[in-house]
Length: 121
Image (cartoon, rainbow, N blue to C red; front, side, top):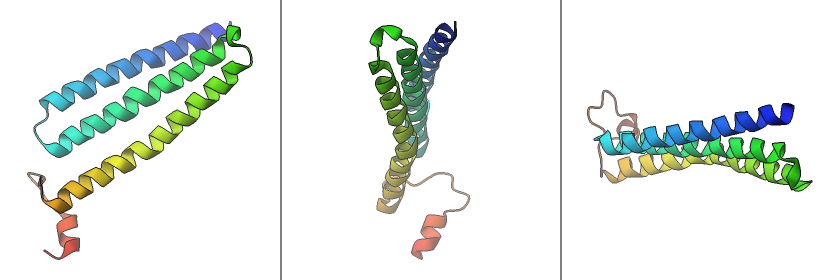
């Protein structure tokens, strides 16, 4: 009974990840600014990959046919999801900061640009 409930929660997380990926793809197409597109890509990366990895972890744990490997698979997927949750925003921030410093895409309209103020320009 509990294994079946865990399996359905995992499948629901897989479906949620698909919806988030769809929304992120639409955002990449519709947004006009580099930084907005980067935001859509990051949301798609985190939500569209984190939720399915957790869903797959729950689904793999709920299958007794996998034997003792199900806990190894579930743990590995959970660790991968946690690492993705920690590293994707850092990579997105580094990409946005490097783009801003290179002057390739200036955020428009910018109310306050603290990066430019820190550089003394």
